[in-house]
Length: 106
Image (tube, rainbow, N blue to C red; front, top):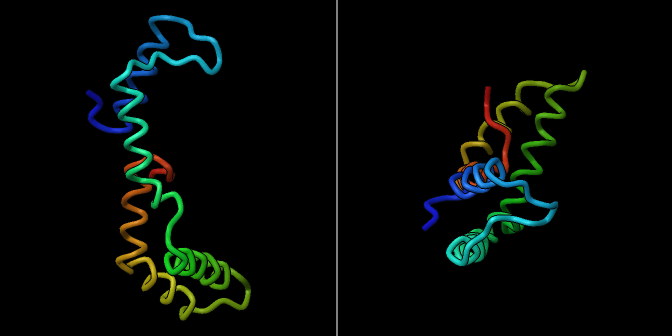
């Protein structure tokens, strides 16, 4: 059985090394198909977060854009940093990282 999303894609990559598949053709057995279906059903709310989380994420972007502009000041940076510590935002980032949907920090 599949343990997590990253393992699932590693399994597909390995299978692709062993056999060439046509585009759109994947080496999925019944357990993998069930796991993918359940995984996305359980995590679809992360891909479509509540409006209050979207407002906070949008506010982070706007405040950093303001901070980086010629007229930006530390209040914008501080506000964005406070929003990054918000529990809703942190949970969204955590789940998106688990799904492999965000770039990794350097």
